[in-house]
Image 1 (spheres, rainbow, N blue to C red):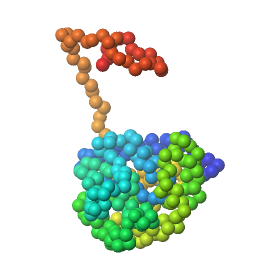
Image 2 (cartoon, helix red, strand yellow):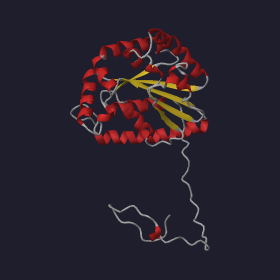
Image 3 (cartoon, one colour):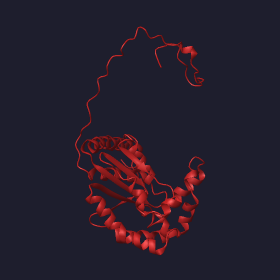
Length: 273
């Protein structure tokens, strides 16, 4: 089941991921049918694996029911709004699940550490966040918060791997590099954030993220456990026969501008569109 490094073997991981993704499909149908409003927050250090688990969650799902929110830095207009305002616009409506790849907790993390907010703004966030989340929950939103916990050693390893791979180097931003130098500052900020926002009504769930395969499976399993659901998967559809139109004359297939077939061959019959 596990290899010599204590990591789930690839075939075991893929089989369990497939099983969990089939359960996510059932959950998706349940959320839509029952009009649930589900909001899931993913937070953690850079390279902790938040994006990886979000990708595995959304992979088999309908983006009309399950969508990802990853907001860029605020515009000048947004900086002059109430802090939570731009996040409120992204909250789920009935029958929808929203996954926040970072959230309003930016203020308690990167904004605090990098000095992008004032001390007064930071303190106001810590005061306002718990009642804000309680209000969301009272309104009927199912709020689930995950913190992906990663070791200094593992983060360094992932950063180096990204730097060495031209296909992944875009993932490294100047902010990521700076976060390495400010590791302890981020730790202090996270501890203070938990002190104020890890509440009984809206707790943080911590995911051990040092091994990606384990983190993904553990997080998805836990997410499925947070909502009671039943299998509402629809029965297979019976497709109608194509109706005939004797008066319809199709243009010859040779009249189309086909993309050059560098792989395979282009069709020669006219039974296509």
